[in-house]
Each structure stands twice: as C-alpha cells, then as structure tokens.
Image (cartoon, rainbow, N blue to C red; front, side):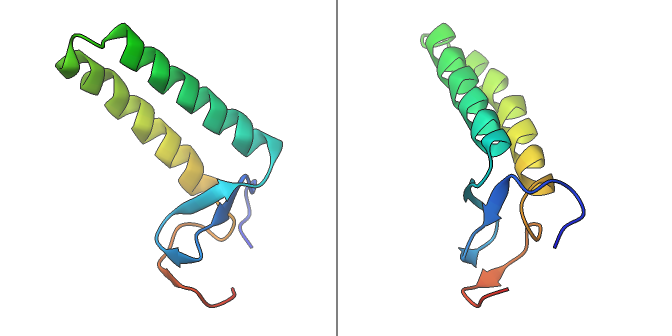
Length: 81
C-alpha cells in the first residue's frame, strides 16, 4: 500500500497506471483530456507548437498518475499483489 492518495489502479500486466479508481483520478483524467483536445484544436494547423504544448501536459499527467497509483509504478506479471 502506498502512503499517498490512491487515485489510479495499477495495471495488471506491464508498467504504469490503469483506470482511475476515485473521483480525483477521474477529475485529473478529464482535465487532461480537455486540455489535450483544446491544445489540439488551438494548434491544429501548427504541429510543432501542438507537440510543444502537449509534451509538458503529458509529463505532468504522468507524474500525477505515477504518484497516485495504488502500489506505485512497477512491472507487473499479472499476479495479485
């Protein structure tokens, strides 16, 4: 069990986070999706600027997901934790 909040479930196989398991996780995911779509629409004719806007957004979302995933991010082989 992690010491921090648990907003995302761990993936069963592989590395990373699975789906959100709390309202905070859903709120962060929805905010990320909204900002990503907004950046895509804003910079639809300028791909380099779209990428420049999306990279920090993705990085922040990944850090939040990593810090709030139950059990943290680690490689999993499908066994129950």
